[in-house]
Amino acid sequence: MKRRVIKLFGIFAVLFLVANSLSSWTNNTVKYNKPDANYTATVTPEQKSKFNFLTIGKSFVAFKEALAFKESKGKYNRVNIYGYLGKYQFGKSTLKRFKIYDTAEFLKNPELQEDAFVALCSVNKWILQRDIKRFKGKKINGVEVTESGILAAAHLAGAGNVKKYLRSYGAFKFEDAFGTTIHYYLKKFAGYDTSLIEANRMPKII
Image 1 (tube, rainbow, N blue to C red):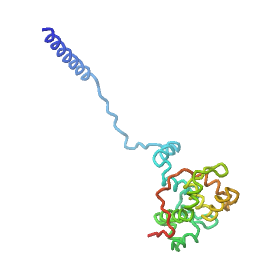
Image 2: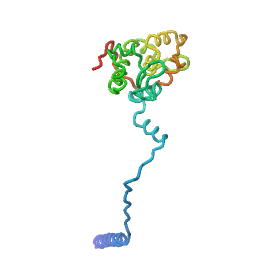
Image 3: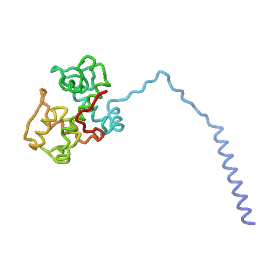
Image 4: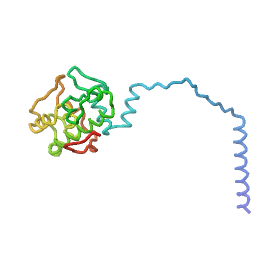
């Protein structure tokens, strides 16, 4: 008998709460905010920076974009005062290595520039593969040596000069026409994931 009374009481309590909730809901007014078709969202540079960090982090994409920004502010049509070309500031002799002779066409072709950059990284990784294994994780002049740092430095100074720098433990000095050093590139571009770059003596650009 007690169980039946408790059960009935529970049912009435639930019905009362539901009825009360419905009554309360019907007395409320729901307002719908219609979006403004002319509204434009504003993203601050700081927010953009945070977004980029979260999305590409230390990936290979982040590596090449960071290097490109240092070289040319990321501009495909950039030619500097010394004649270096494109987003990654290639020298004409380097382009000839990949059988790219038409520099005007090269400047207008983003895909070709991206392919050339990957090809150059592949060549440099092949040339420096022993040095990468030997020096990766060691510190030279206070900077931890990483594969991405080595590849960036090779882009700046050439693989041969990077070899000299590493094997002399930083005693060999190099700087480009703007005063940029191997030490600076090793530090600035350290820790990126360049594992997808295959060491290749003769990569082909299709």
